[in-house]
Length: 257
Image 1: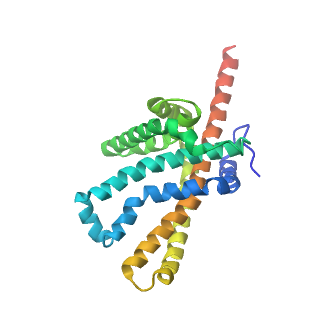
Image 2: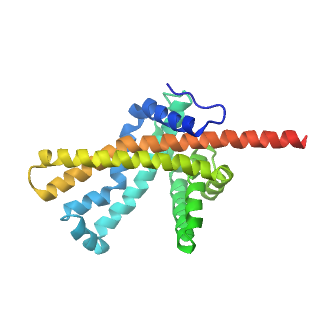
Image 3: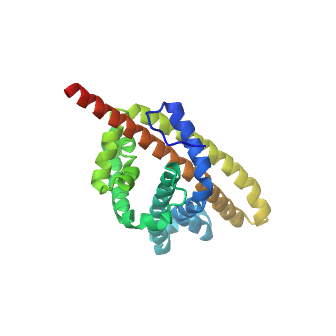
């Protein structure tokens, strides 16, 4: 059972809460997670239908279908991700029958796309300049999705709002997300091994079909299992930092009085 935190949590509590929230919300969001994973990797799947990753990588530079799938898959992935955020937040808040999360995400979808573009530009510029600024921004701006969806802010305000929340707790946030990333990496390895074992049975002996089946299996399973966890982790970090920020503001006001 999961209860939305009402006071700042330790790192262990944030991680534990993320696991419990993932388990609690899984049956409500797995379809969105599957669609987000497949949409975001549609171009990779298309590569295999063109003869494998090595051949497709060269042809993709002049392949309109490939780049159309990259664009469409990215846009749809953002929409499905927003729906997962809204659904998991509703479940954590006790609103298990909160309507269609996909419809609720549509009005914020264009703003979220702009926020993501600005996020990647900021991180890319920081990495190109001195690397370290890019890493700092990668962590401090990572809560822009939650800020945009739940605080009714625009793209720029969501990025600056994320930075204000994380700043002062940057190292703590980095530790939490690093642990989450290690868990995801291990899960990817397990899924890769399972996909490599199952695909030959399903696809026969054709190497191309085996590669395609393996890719689809791994991406589908990864989308179903990993995406809800990362969203739950992001939300728990967001709620924890909001509580810490509000507590700091109250302390500052009390001192001022």
